[in-house]
Amino acid sequence: MTKLGFQLYCARNFPPLSDTLKLVARAGYTEVEGYGGIYATLDEAALKALRVDLDANGLTMPTSHFGMDLLEKEPEQALLIARTLGIEAIYCPYLMPDQRPADAGGWFGFGQRLQQAGKRYQDAGLTFGWHNHDFEFKTLADGSTPQEQILAGGPDLSWEADIAWIIRGNADPFAWIERYGNRITAVHVKDIAPAGENTDEDGWADVGHGTVPWKDLMTALRKTPARHYVLEHDNPKDVERLLTRSIASFKTY
Picture 1 (spheres, rainbow, N blue to C red):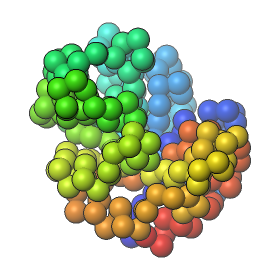
Picture 2: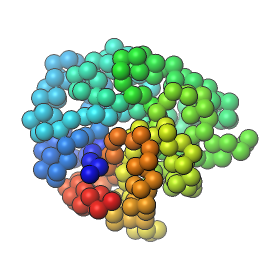
Picture 3: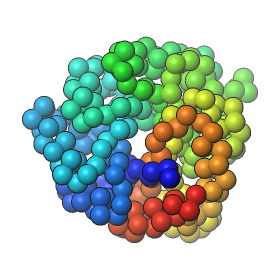
Picture 4: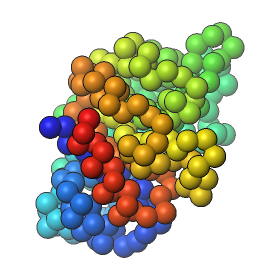
């Protein structure tokens, strides 16, 4: 059975992290995905303490999100984090609006930049790639999309495919899986509420309680190299509800 992990970013508004880890383990998860806010500035002693907390809850952190500043400007810190926490795959998760290129050539160049940044991590034995949102699927003046250009500019990049963001970008996730499935090494599993619902949760839903056709998507995704499936909800009101309902649904896929 495919395992479901948990992106710790979902619980950022419900500290402390130590309580979240207990909650995640109690709900039946064995993997979490990290993000910069919980470890980017930690020294080695604090990172080791976090690893002890993960181990105590029977949790591993095989995948993680690292921002461009950390990846490019503090590679030794990034590698220390990865080594200490047992991370196997690093995904750059976002680009602020004011940093986004305006045309196809700019996005291709950004793919080249990611490729260059990722080489040191790949040389260290880590998977390295990009995690999408919705803006990568907006059509550019030449008819292409930023996502195509990023993957073309960085031919060795892996892709952590956030399926619900593809849908929110008005793109067809099945077509993208068909075209780029060989690049997908991890997947964000999230759901979209029916129109007008869950407005206090930014329109997201617990997995299996929204409109994303996850059963069919999992059939397609299992044909890709994806090794990690990670639950995410960008703004849940109740983390325990999210954890328990989502894993119950995912087990049926």
